[in-house]
Amino acid sequence: MQPAPALRSELFGWLGVVSLCLSSATLQAADFAYLEPIDEVEMSELRGGFQISGLDMSFGATLQTLVDNVRMDTVFIINGTGAEVVSQTITQHGVIDGQLVNQVGQGSGKTIMELTPSGINLTGMKDFPGLVVNDSKGFTSVFHSVTQDAILGGVVSDASGRDIRQQLDIGVQVNNLPALQAAQQRHFITNSLAR
Image (cartoon, rainbow, N blue to C red; front, side, top):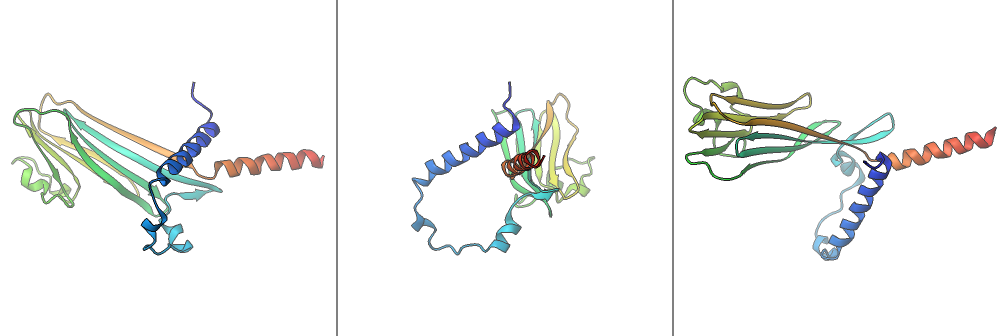
């Protein structure tokens, strides 16, 4: 049986407080003394999420693609101005003889064009971040991209006998839910006393 959303929200809040208390023992104020405080206007622009009908909401997601023993995870947040990639990791579990795994795209130093066999045209994907798996089964490329309008997870392959899976987990958090519940309770009490 799962706890009610309000209880779950309160539980996560308390877990966050406990983790902050535990980690604060190792951090000293002097560690951050050289940093300038961020003003309120700049801080409001850095916060993730946005407001819809009074609900202060944050969205985050993880896009995961598994190609046999290789996994690519892309974590991102969605806010009022669009989407931002927080991290992208590639994990290889176990070793398969002759398997070559390469990260491609931004910051990797490799392009998809260098690693694509002849007969496959991925010119339109040349700037997308992703990975390439080459082994005795064939060629497989994976791309993850996030825009303001779409979450893209693509796989191009000429391989046979591969186990390929994709999964998208989206998390929604209502940051001001306890305050809204308290306001609603006050409203009901005030209305019942006014009768």
